[in-house]
Length: 241
Image (tube, rainbow, N blue to C red; front, side, top):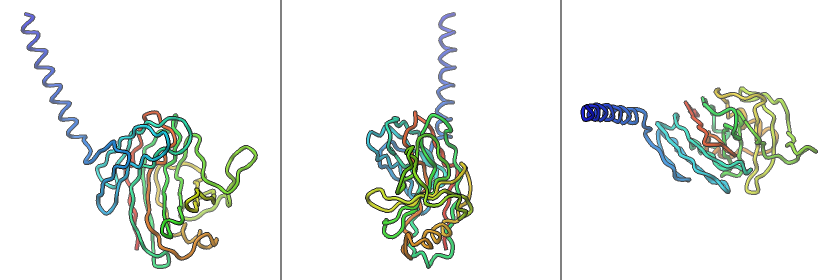
């Protein structure tokens, strides 16, 4: 009787293991890595894990394509950006030569317990200028600015600016290596389309940058702290002409 039960249990165990193996095969990502600076090229884009901050913890990245990817990030709450997993599209076109430059995105992110923003990082002028478009932000994160108020909050250069299909508070500062222009959306969104060219031309109209080369468009998650949290880019694309 005991032998029969053992055989029955063994059969069930084998079936379960086979089922788990099949499930893992079905849901396995096309590419994955836990290396801090892992990268994967696909469809004219490059997906980066980009774990670079001081005291950063483990972060694993997966991707099925440049458009569909994500990370599980375990970052300590010690202040400072730990990582910027992203998908990058190289443009390398002069601003005045661009007729259009737009992007669409859709993400799934944690809404509590983590500090981060879903953001574009656009580089121009041989990376002299960094333009960040914060689509959402959670936790104790704030943009680089030129001044702060008495409570330590960054002071915006302009507020409620409607450009590129969204309304932003705009900050201007430097990280010590390059100028940083941060457009922080006045309300969080996890999906949308952005007219990036309109934003760049608005910056140029303020005299903050010249008619320079637009080097690349990145989109991803700038993570300051996250208790083993998952971030997913469901879709993402950049179109230019």
